[in-house]
Amino acid sequence: MGKTALITGITGQDGSYLAELLLEKGYDVYGLIRRLSTPNISRIEQILDKIELVEGDLTDQSSLDNAMRTAQPDEVYNLAAQSFVGTSWNQPVLTGDVSGLGVVRILESVKHQCHDARVYQASTSEMFGKVQEVPQSETTRFYPRSPYGFAKVYGYWACVNYRESYDIHVSNGILFNHESPRRGIEFVTRKITDSVARIHHGLASELRLGNLDAKRDWGFAGDYVKAMWLMLQQDQPDDFVVSTGETHSVREFVELAFEEVGLDWEKYVVVDPKFVRPTEVDLLLGNPAKAKRVLGWEPKVRFEELVKMMVKADVERLSK
Ligand code: NAP
Ligand code: F7E
Image (cartoon, rainbow, N blue to C red):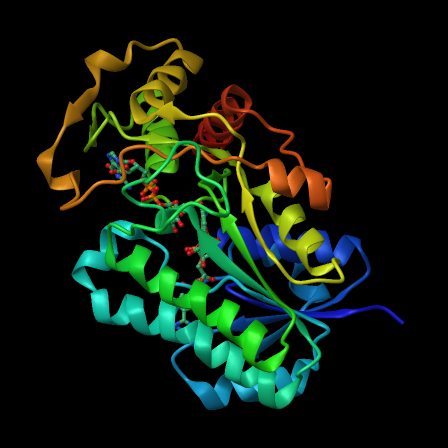
């Protein structure tokens, strides 16, 4: 018999790629979806007839219990979060409630409704924050630099604790930044590629950004959801860094994106203090050796290809 998965955050970037991957593998896929005045289903429109949506919210325990009872999942992928670091300073309590306490609600629900389900928790390189060593691995000490970062550290340790206290098969994927044409428009990569496409089509004349010196280990979301799945196929739950092992600055991303449409970025980019954060994560560089060794996972899409893919998609979208 095929397996059943429940994905929280199915309407997000990763949720949509993961749902497609699991459908390809023959899973019955359930997705938790929260009530909004205008439904946000643009990323999953192409698979709506193949998945089941269950209403629920990470801040509401009974809705999570109901989702677990309805789906009876073999695997639970907890991808839902208030995931934008910038917003987390303006909404620190909400961020803690959804991205931190929400993890405990999921674990409680699994404990009571479907104890044998395997759980994936969307942990993050933002937990390393002000990095204590380079590159960062599973043993690097955390030093979060935002309300998002410290909410995720709470969620991470909740998973470790439920694994040890209740024998729940729960794994943390410590994923470094991963992007795609489906990335939310507020994140820097997509903000850049969308603006490059607008400038290319004559729809905009400048791009306002914050810190161009920040460095990130950027990969492709389509590659990273495969690592999530692989983690839940292991007999033993564990924690894994998922990254490319390369780091690039925001400035490098900008240069390459403008180059793709034959423009000189320095004529269009304006540094605006409005986009500079109260505390910055200056440098992220992950060591994915354990994911390679244990899971056999490696990223396929490299930095240049990722930038090209995203610029191309935005140029095509806006030409319609
Ligand atoms: P995303 O595009 O922002 O998607 C977040 C999802 O969470 C959306 O489906 C959103 O639903 C849902 N959500 C938000 N608040 C919720 C609530 N209260 N109850 C239920 N659902 C809620 O994020 P992503 O890039 O796909 O990332 C997926 C997960 O990985 C997140 O947990 C993120 O923190 C983590 N992560 C991301 C990266 C990255 O680089 N992308 C790296 C490491 C970790 P709506 O559509 O209704 O808003
Ligand atoms: O910022 C700098 C900004 O918002 C990247 C989330 O998926 O990855 C993501 O978090 C860098 C930062 O992503 C602008 O200061 C400059 O240094 O694209 P971002 P993030 O904060 O790294 C981690 C792994 C997650 O877990 C999160 O959920 O770019 N930057 N100028 C800017 N950033 C934005 N957004 N906008 C700017 O104008």
